[in-house]
Each structure stands twice: as structure tokens, then as C-alpha cells.
Length: 120
Length: 357
Image: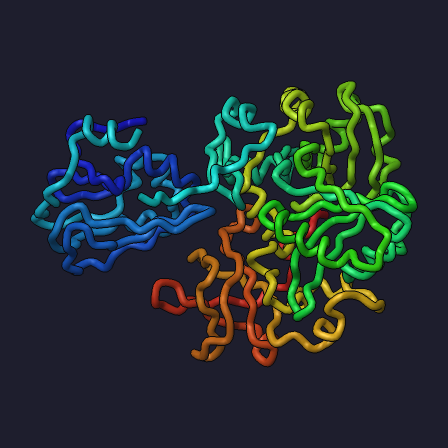
């Protein structure tokens, strides 16, 4: 399981980069299995840390994705509409979900080490 | 101090084998079962193109025997058991006396006065109590053999070819619904040419103590282990209703497209089943967004029913669903399904969604 050390992690399996980019972890995509559909928030939407803002669907289930930071959605990964499987193949790269401008991270985000421990 | 007690999940004889194969185990109908090994899509494709093996040991087996065995089964089921010759199997229903189903089952005729009934895992206790309550006036003996049997389902276009070198009967001569004893890898088993995936295949009844060895040998000769996830996408593509979703104690069974399971004979619940069902089961196809059980189905903006099972079809490449809709709203070509508060177009698709060539 990959857990890049430069990212912060929510217990609900989202990652947050300093620039506000958000995705789901390698652990989460592996648990979900084949991702077949991703519903992303609208650009311009104000979100609050902890709020359900997106949905990732695998063959079997739909999973809510929670904002790991408060702020305004300024970009979403349009490539996922045609290729949702990017979430499986590159959860920290091409499979990113959305970007929050001037993110105010939630208080309880974890380091890579803490997340790895909690996800075991 | 009171403490909540939880019934521990039951394990099949293959539990250790599943862990060895890398399965992700989940609770299912009171059992701890593998939902997937390599991944739902890979397992689904293996069954559609080659052959997979499923552990279905969690299902229940009841033996029904005695001079009145046939007459008893004619009373408690809707299909015509008298048409069943020894060595043949039949899909059947256990109706209740108020217009729903206790369970959907398979019955195999072992001998003139002996049958083996296979029931859904989550219904074993309910079915057993129901059948016991109906025995008055019948010289019949029921035995719950659920713990005695391991049950493995091998399914896929190559299932017969992969089994044939390791079994002492000519499989090509055994037609659909045949039920027969055989020696497989040297073990005494019974096979039934049935299944729940829309593919050709067999269900293998083994002694519970020998199930793990048989499973390991099946993997060794090329069967891909497949879990509950693939079982669900395969059965949904094949349009097979699933108890607890399309069937239930309070769903009129003729809502499904399986009216052939009810034959013209006296049986429990007949007067209710003969009434027209208030809802109908339909198939829906969507463009992109998967729809799940419970999502509302709309016709011209009005709610007319709900999704009973939904998934993204690996074979067809788009989402599919079965839904129960009001009878008077069941013949339209275009519906909408409400997903997280937003309506998405769904077109009517004939069941089954997939039929093997």
C-alpha cells in the first residue's frame, strides 16, 4: 500500500495536498475494487471540512467522499467522467478528484505514518 | 449488567482456503463469506469467458423422504414435482399462505420417495420451521443436512472441459438439471448441472470434510475462485431474481418474469398467487450512473416503484438494474431513476440483460 509522506490523510481515506488537491488513498481504492463512476462536486461550491462532497462508485457499492478541508472547489478532474478507473490505477496522480482553493484542513488529519497505522 | 450478544458468523468448510486465496471476507446472511479475491470484474470475466468456482456451502440442504414425500412437496411448492424423475432437478418456489414466498429453492429427486432440497442460506431456519409446520397428514421425514454438505459451483463455458479429465462420468451426456453421483478427483460427490450465473456449469455436493481438498484441486486444474461480488453481477446480468431483493415474504412472486414456476395444481397459497400481482419486475439500463437497491423509479416525474438490485454490468459496460414498479406503469419504454436527489434517464431493457450464445 502506497502512502506518500508529503500528504495529509483523513480517517475516512481521503488525502489532501498542500495546494488543496484531494483524492482517495491507495488503501481505499483497493478496498473499493473496480471504480465505475465518480460524481464530483460543482466548481465554485463552498465546502466545509467533513462534508460529503463526492461519490465514488465501484461495481458493488457507492461510497461518499468527504472534504478533508474547508474552502471553495476550484477544479475537478474531468478525466474521471470517461475514465473512472484512473482512481484505481493512479489514486495519487491521474486519479485525483477535486481541488480546494485556500484549503483550511480539518483539525484531525493524520500523517502518512498515522494513517498507515489506522488503516491496518 | 446486560450485555448485547451477537451471534457469531458461521464459517463454511472452505474458510481457510478462502484466506489462502487472498479473499476479502464479509458478513452475508449470518455467514462469513468471500466477497472477492482478485477483484469483482476479473472474477466476473473469468466466469463469462473461461470458468470460475464459487463456495456456496452456506446454502442449506434438506432431505425429504417417505411414502408421501412427493405429495408433501406438491403441497408446499408451486412447480410440479410429480414431473421430476429420479436424477433430475427443478427450480421451485415455497409459497406462504398470504401471497409471498418463503423462499426460492432447487429440488433434486434422488429416488421415488426421496428428494434433496437446496435453500437460501439466510432462510434455512425459516424454511425449516415452515416445512415442519406443514407436515400434518403426510407420512414424510425431513432431515436438515446443511452441515453435512460442502457445495461448490463451477460455472463458465470451460467448466465441463476442465472437469472431464478428473471425473468418472461422461459430462456431455448429462443435460441441464441432471443430478448424478460421480467420483471427482477420487472423492464421492453428487453433481447437478445447474447454476446461477447464466453460464453452463455444475454444482458439486461434497462431504463437508472433503470440500477443501476438492476446492484446492479445482483451483489447481484452472478454475478461478470467484466471490459474492461476481456472483451478484453475473446473476443480475442473467436476470435471476434474488431472495431478499426481488422475492420476499411480502412480494407477489408473479411480479417476476418466472410465472412458469407456478403450475396448475393445488398448493399452499394458491388463491393468493392466482390474483394479479400489484407490481411487476422490469429491467432498466442507464447510461453512466450506477443505481442501487431502494432508489426510486419515476415515470413522467411520478414515483412508480423502486430498484431492487443494481450494478454496473461488466459484460455490457453500462449500469443495469431490476426494479419493481406498479403494474399500470410497467409497460413504458423510458423511466427515470432518482440518484442522490437527481433524476437520471433509464430505458426499459428486456430481461435477461445477458444470454449466453
